Length: 373
Ligand SMILES: *Cc1c(COP(=O)(O)O)cnc(C)c1O
Image (tube, rainbow, N blue to C red; front, side, top):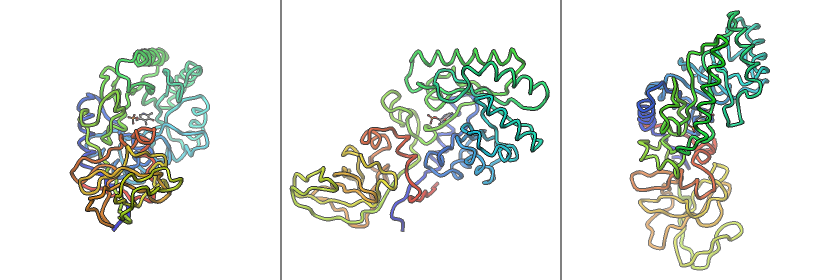
């Protein structure tokens, strides 16, 4: 009997993967960085692959290596690999690597010499986000790559980039990045570099921008059934997506309190009337943000109970209402429900001044992930 758990509905994941690949008309790369957005790396990766994802992608190399060690056979790309990374292991385990700079290329070449394994690389170009990817170095990088390709020393699997504003439908910056990307690909081709696949789209572009799909789409938040941006794109149901995670914790205590009771550290909330409060056994050490306000809360039975006062390290208080029939030991659903209309990761995002991505990825290691269906 757990104190708290994240239930991960793998049949919902499967449905989302199928949906995204169907609308993409391209292959799908399942993005499983950050422990599969907090959903549990291996079970998610396995189910995504069986549902039709032909690729997996992670930020960190260690995440990619875990996938290989877990028996995953499909191509895997790691795109955030500082020069200190163990590129030899990457080559030995057949992990594709992103190349954003000449320094990365040099480090990977060295590992290739030491292991006698030909690297599989994806050239990363900065088309306007000004985060990863080559910008002023792009031409020089292409020249070096072209030389290595001619000498049979490297295999260019892909060229790719990343959108900064894909969740703003119709924003001209998306067009700009797209045409920039095409131009950069042409420059590569002129130097004899022929990538097998081009990829640019994240979830938002996969959902709304067909012309950016190319050969492969990188499916992140949408695969987990969450909207890339509720305000601009609408809720997940409207996008044909099913939330994969529900999150629940036990009520450590249910008790009656009088009107005028100040609740929690700093007494930031005061009860208006006599009521029943529930103490939920989960706190900021588990990833429930301390600054969550009463736009978030829990579902107990079929009733919403908003947060009262500040979230503590291991617990927080909710207002169950004077006539609540909730009892000590009941489940309180922070996200989702057993059927009723519960709080969403989006509601928590709103209540904490952040987005659904941050809510699910920050759920801590003290919370077991229970994979169902
Ligand atoms: C995280 C990430 C994605 C997925 O983004 P979503 O918005 O979750 O779809 C795609 N590509 C790269 C390079 C990423 O880092």
